[in-house]
Length: 300
Image (cartoon, rainbow, N blue to C red):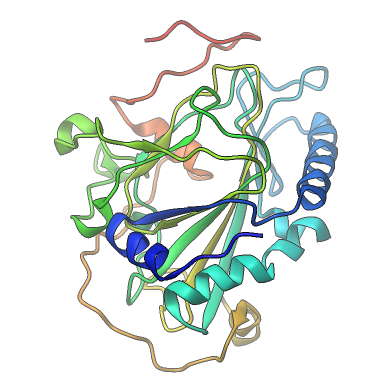
């Protein structure tokens, strides 16, 4: 199984992301696939978004179109066990030290032929903290290549500004590329075999295109933070819930304050819900959308 070395840590700090192959075993990947298939079957009964399911346009019982499993760690032990997976935590400890806190999870389905895109954005725009030792770990459940909607990242953008993620005066969770003057021509696709993980910095600009291939690109995302990074918004509610999120090391009552650019995600999005709903407000989307039918759309 892969691990990381000091050169990887230096690369993460310079580029803002890492790919680490073979973190999950073939048996763990197979278990994730079986469990995810079970959730697709369960989604047949859903007629609108629920606390578990975020649905693609055109979802029906006969032809389920599941866009995201929301907080999968809450719903099944196969998912929840990965929150504290020792090889994932070892990577984060190498980057930040021993004290690490989990935040939340989601499973973006990106199904073959219609998997929705995610517009360019920075996770930091959604949840600024007292410091920026925050990252998302992406777990590849399927092989990811250039055709099935890989995550695209803009290297070194985590060292630059926090871009405006507003449309019509309200937060929308997306960057208007033209208005921002953002050059995404040097974006890098994150490719790898199932079982590979990605780690991307919370301030890194990233997105993903529609999956126009016939192959799935299911991608389980866990958000983590250094234990001394405290949210500027969204207090977790009670102390027991907060401390239960610690996955490594010791608790602290001393937030680490570093001078970081911040834009608050306010006023809130008109389309409250997942990032997909938030981003409907964007007037000039960058990525092509699938049609409402059963197959890929023409490119717009």
